[in-house]
Image 1: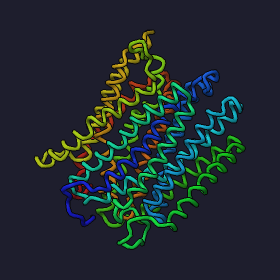
Image 2: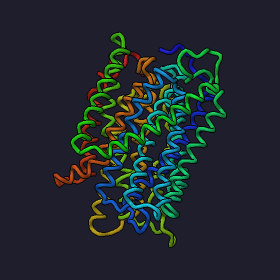
Image 3: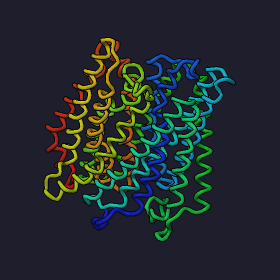
Image 4: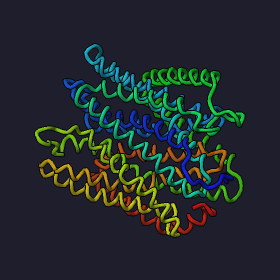
Length: 497
């Protein structure tokens, strides 16, 4: 356990990381808002003309891998570079990925759809690896500022979460609006420049991070990266971009059977490597007990995100095709519905942050497993509402936008019970020297949830079972199980709240 005093105020470094994460989320969510709509747009509208199932499959693979590569980024950070250099590398690489996506649109009259789609895939691949280096490490630095049992820690992560959602709002409005209403390329270009701004901000305010996040064995009086560190950042960034392009190029020439075999081998290697790293780094009964809690809640976490990530897939298509978006003679972009989640975060996150501190003072603050259970129940209610909306749409009418708004708000309340609490939980329960790797494990649960989000509709269609009721019932079941086993989980946390 970290021997840090409980804080009376949040550190300046929190707000530096807040703004850096804000610009990264501007980049990611601006791109995410456009992804499925761009893929399904007709060739006449400069899209690729893919059908619904094919577009959702690409969405599933991309959003799944985006949360899987943090395992690699966490390992590189812990073993080689430290969190700070790894964050810079991830940010620069992601900016390049966005520029590739923009190029796939701007070259629509110069290249064939097949070549444009290859460029688009290159961009997605670069984004995936860049996100893996960025995502787990910036969250880890936030946690390092606080004592594990400091009630300000959950509050700090809620403030950090505000940065995530402020960036999502700006990205969806600006990049999403530009892409959908003007030109897809301008949306991706804006997302790329947003990521560059995040890197520049972090560099300008780097001294506020004190000594946290620096490479292993760095002198304690060093607060900023030097020229030698930056040469490493540039070399890694260029190498990752080239390596990603090479892998995707070679992948295109492999027969289907070989691709399947390589996929299973890589998946097995990740599982074995992660298991070995955790096994070697976890010592003593208390650490193993806490690790068991992380694993159980990570598995449950998959269910929530398989539902939540319908936002960028089926919800986006529902907004475009089944929702009345005409307001005062103007048609609102379908991408903007995704901002309901972010606005709700801005409204409720600070209230939740204050609520946890107030409940802690009263001795009423729920333990982490019960917060998770409440999140599942709120998700189940959201999908009950979405089931009713889909029923109306199936009758042939365009439904009121308030159906989607209410679903997004309910899912947001559930998200606040899981996501910031989950990030805080990892920094509390994981062994100190494995925090970034275990954060990667936590992100892997998001990967599985995101992948299932895109694949579920196609899978359930084979059994003629509707998507939204299925998700509702699974969330209810997992919520009940979490409540029933929460006493065991609380005991296994060994004194950590």
